[in-house]
Length: 208
Image 1 (cartoon, one colour):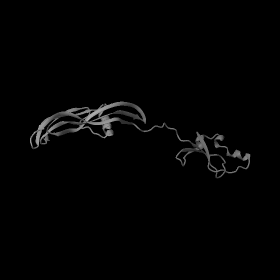
Image 2 (tube, one colour; image 1 turned 90 degrees about the horizontal axis):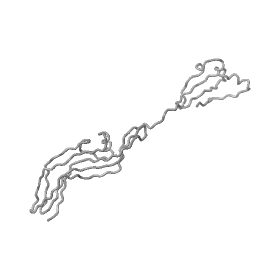
Image 3 (cartoon, helix red, strand yellow; image 1 turned 180 degrees about the vertical axis):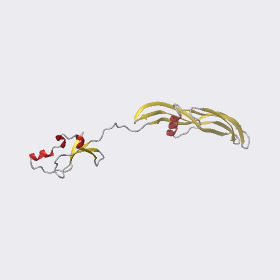
Image 4 (tube, rainbow, N blue to C red; image 1 turned 120 degrees about the vertical axis):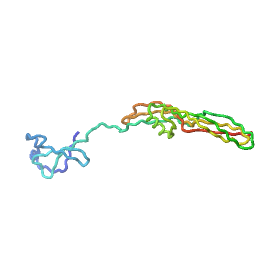
């Protein structure tokens, strides 16, 4: 749509005088000879039309409206939306040790545990998005399980019955992996993930 804008106006004395304001195009002059492009104060492109015998100080021009381009939000992302989050432990070794002596004792054991990642997503990049969102890193690699064996020692207090445990700290979360294109949600996939985060050991002693 075009709008006409007049920069200055001059009083017209008679209707006869209006005939002198006819555009040059009425005299078989090509439109390209009449128009000049310019940029308005708002940064829009306009077209100036020159008139034959125009009154001094008067300019009449036609200003074009802004061009219409498809509008979209430049947002192309994959995000994780957690519904549940929980920390826990996965115990791989447990034993009960009794110390009847009057002094502390030490027991050592060769114990094993698992480093594991059950990601619940299709790519390591998405798993990285998930762990970044919940703020808890996995100690293992994406989609892999490995066995760790160590020799671990526990101090057993005098005259106690002590329960010792060894395993892995774990983290579990459920939620949705959402994918956006140009600001529009294109897919939403349910995700259930669990993984180990660190080594875990514990002892609990009770007096005899």
